Amino acid sequence: MQVNIFRKKSCVGLDIGSKNIKLVSLIPASQKKFRLKNFQILPLPDDVVQLDTLPENKLSAILSILNDVFSKNKKLAKTVAISVAGSSVVIRYVKLPIMTKEELERSISIEVEPFIPFPINEVYLSFDITGEVIEEGIRKNEVVVAAVKKEVVDTLISLLSKCDLTPAFIDVDSFVLERILNYNYELKGNIICAVNIGANITTVTIIEDGVTRVCRDLTIGMNNFLNEIQKTKQMGLSEILEYIKNDGLILSDEEKEQYLMQNKKTELSISKDLNVLLKDLITEVHKIIDFYYFQKGEQKPLSKIILSGGGCVIRNLTSYFSNEFKVETEVLDPFKNIENSDIVPQEIRPLFAISVGLALKPYIF
Ligand SMILES: Nc1ncnc2c1ncn2[C@@H]1O[C@H](COP(=O)(O)OP(=O)(O)OP(=O)(O)O)[C@@H](O)[C@H]1O
Ligand SMILES: [Mg+2]
Image (cartoon, rainbow, N blue to C red; front, side, top):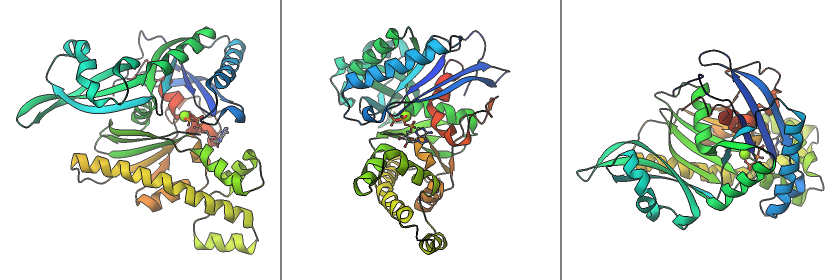
């Protein structure tokens, strides 16, 4: 990780999630330190959060929130860093014939077309040469390619322009996670599995020695959990969320006993539902970890699981993960190394993983 705080124009980290827009503004404080200037969490109305919401409804809700926040905070930079995630993004690790970066720039769409599941003229491509390997006696470049549907990027750019905002960087959530983890943790010699649980998307990345090796966006998130639980409980989503925060997963036999003695049936039932719903997520994360070990032939065990995103509000989620994977699990604090960040309440800090990572983008590469 290289940090350069000089001659970089700061920009606002703007994470436009499907439930919450998170905004972070940082200023360089000293050589590798940054100071928090502004942070906001701006919820979208519940009726536009579902994955199947008509884009126009969602876009107009986002537009009015952004216009409002940037007009109220005149000191915020009008240059932003945003990111994309989910089914419109594909990341592939491929081996290509040896060529220079300039040569690859010219031929990238032809080279990677077989690996991208979308028509190649409908995506924006970005790539990085990450190393060199010998495959069947032939030297090859290892290349990571990100393909993002043009339609999605163009819609975002046009939305931002309506708010008078300019996107200086467009990133993908998995690489933003890599950046925020590198900024906060010593990753050399470690294999980390980062899991960012949002409202509709969970981003899972395996980071080896600080570099992403496998990443995937799963269409599972808090929204599914809340909606599924609501089907059997006569409660509003916010009420269910309160149970999830306060009681969450009731795991140990002692705790179960206590809840039973206090006749807390709703709490026990929600915990049981959550347990079942999380199993799907756990199965998918297991598959991603297995894939990493299969293709690497790596023997070294996973060092840690690091959780972030709105899913971290589920009480006992870290214990649940460490029980399931038999690996130490912790919640990411993206503000850990950011000065003046004590003002951000503990409970919402993990939700800012992507927005802090985006705000760091101009400085860290
Ligand atoms: N203080 C809070 N405000 C809003 N949502 C919260 C809060 N605490 C927990 N949550 C939960 O977090 C979820 C949203 O998390 P997050 O903000 O990470 O998702 P998102 O980025 O909007 O969604 P996605 O990345 O899936 O598009 C909500 O569905 C809600 O259940
Ligand atoms: Mg998100």
